[in-house]
Length: 95
Image (cartoon, rainbow, N blue to C red):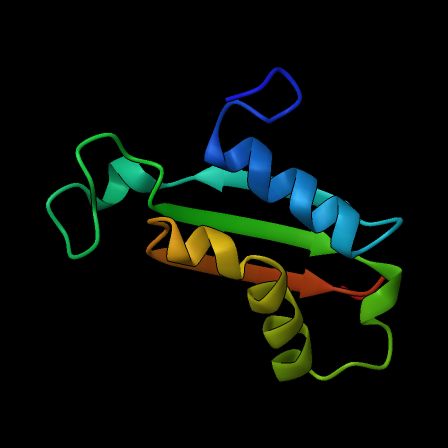
Protein backbone atom coordinates (compact mmCIF):
# COMPACT_ATOMS: atom_id res chain seq x y z
CA UNK A 1 0.00 0.00 0.00
CA UNK A 2 1.35 3.46 -0.84
CA UNK A 3 1.13 6.39 1.53
CA UNK A 4 -1.58 7.96 -0.66
CA UNK A 5 -3.96 4.99 -0.31
CA UNK A 6 -6.47 5.10 2.56
CA UNK A 7 -5.56 2.56 5.25
CA UNK A 8 -8.91 0.82 5.74
CA UNK A 9 -11.80 -0.22 3.54
CA UNK A 10 -14.01 2.30 5.40
CA UNK A 11 -11.55 5.05 4.44
CA UNK A 12 -11.54 3.85 0.82
CA UNK A 13 -15.35 3.75 0.72
CA UNK A 14 -15.56 7.29 2.05
CA UNK A 15 -12.92 8.60 -0.38
CA UNK A 16 -14.56 6.86 -3.34
CA UNK A 17 -18.01 8.21 -2.49
CA UNK A 18 -16.71 11.75 -1.96
CA UNK A 19 -15.05 11.58 -5.37
CA UNK A 20 -18.12 10.08 -7.09
CA UNK A 21 -20.59 12.50 -5.50
CA UNK A 22 -19.04 15.99 -5.24
CA UNK A 23 -20.32 18.05 -2.35
CA UNK A 24 -21.66 14.99 -0.53
CA UNK A 25 -21.71 14.36 3.20
CA UNK A 26 -20.56 10.78 3.72
CA UNK A 27 -20.61 8.64 6.87
CA UNK A 28 -19.29 5.08 6.76
CA UNK A 29 -19.66 2.58 9.61
CA UNK A 30 -18.00 -0.84 9.68
CA UNK A 31 -20.65 -3.25 10.98
CA UNK A 32 -18.57 -6.38 10.33
CA UNK A 33 -18.34 -7.32 14.01
CA UNK A 34 -22.14 -7.53 14.14
CA UNK A 35 -22.06 -10.17 11.41
CA UNK A 36 -19.29 -12.45 12.72
CA UNK A 37 -20.12 -16.03 11.81
CA UNK A 38 -22.63 -15.01 9.14
CA UNK A 39 -22.31 -15.46 5.39
CA UNK A 40 -19.63 -13.30 3.86
CA UNK A 41 -17.98 -12.43 7.16
CA UNK A 42 -14.20 -12.67 7.19
CA UNK A 43 -11.97 -13.11 10.25
CA UNK A 44 -10.35 -9.71 9.65
CA UNK A 45 -13.67 -7.91 9.26
CA UNK A 46 -14.16 -5.09 6.74
CA UNK A 47 -16.95 -7.01 4.99
CA UNK A 48 -20.21 -5.38 6.16
CA UNK A 49 -20.77 -1.62 6.08
CA UNK A 50 -23.50 0.95 6.61
CA UNK A 51 -23.24 4.08 4.48
CA UNK A 52 -25.14 7.36 4.85
CA UNK A 53 -24.76 9.79 1.95
CA UNK A 54 -26.42 13.16 1.47
CA UNK A 55 -25.51 14.33 -2.02
CA UNK A 56 -26.75 17.15 -4.24
CA UNK A 57 -26.41 14.74 -7.17
CA UNK A 58 -29.19 12.57 -5.74
CA UNK A 59 -31.81 15.31 -6.29
CA UNK A 60 -34.41 14.06 -8.74
CA UNK A 61 -33.09 10.47 -8.67
CA UNK A 62 -35.22 7.54 -7.60
CA UNK A 63 -34.16 5.40 -4.66
CA UNK A 64 -33.16 2.63 -7.06
CA UNK A 65 -31.10 4.98 -9.24
CA UNK A 66 -29.26 6.27 -6.17
CA UNK A 67 -28.50 2.73 -5.03
CA UNK A 68 -27.27 1.74 -8.48
CA UNK A 69 -25.00 4.80 -8.63
CA UNK A 70 -23.44 3.96 -5.25
CA UNK A 71 -23.02 0.29 -6.13
CA UNK A 72 -21.37 1.26 -9.43
CA UNK A 73 -18.97 3.60 -7.62
CA UNK A 74 -18.05 0.85 -5.14
CA UNK A 75 -17.90 -2.09 -7.57
CA UNK A 76 -14.17 -2.63 -7.00
CA UNK A 77 -14.74 -3.00 -3.25
CA UNK A 78 -17.36 -5.69 -3.82
CA UNK A 79 -14.87 -7.45 -6.08
CA UNK A 80 -12.26 -7.13 -3.34
CA UNK A 81 -14.13 -8.83 -0.50
CA UNK A 82 -16.82 -6.43 0.67
CA UNK A 83 -19.95 -8.53 1.23
CA UNK A 84 -22.77 -6.24 2.33
CA UNK A 85 -23.68 -2.58 2.21
CA UNK A 86 -26.62 -0.95 4.01
CA UNK A 87 -27.50 2.34 2.33
CA UNK A 88 -29.21 5.52 3.42
CA UNK A 89 -29.10 7.87 0.44
CA UNK A 90 -30.66 11.32 0.44
CA UNK A 91 -30.56 14.61 -1.42
CA UNK A 92 -30.07 17.77 0.67
CA UNK A 93 -33.31 18.82 2.36
CA UNK A 94 -34.83 15.33 2.41
CA UNK A 95 -35.91 14.08 5.85
